[in-house]
Length: 139
Image (cartoon, rainbow, N blue to C red):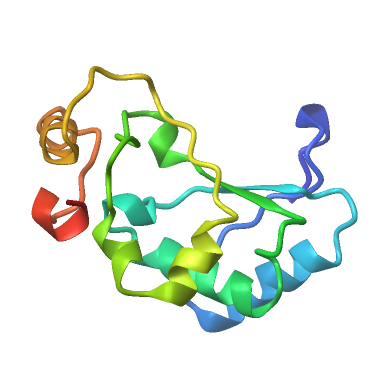
């Protein structure tokens, strides 16, 4: 689907279907004008498994080597602590950590809160709707 008024070359949607992931990744590879990929799925930082799968497949296809920047859309809407924070999904998976190096997380400025405090507040205000507890995501 083309969005000429927005000057975007293409927009793709995908589900958990492996064939759709491969199709979207190949479309990105063969596009000469895409350099920023906006991921409209829950961020891996808040338990987004689909983003983890997407990034690992992108890494396997060579898309996380620096030519493309991946931006998680959901983190634009709430604050994600970044100072002195270790995120659980990235701790025990070196491949995912390497793939995540291609991600540019843009987030709302916030008061200095711990991850647990910020995540609990985001869940309370319905900014994050995942059924996970803060300790399952970051620490």
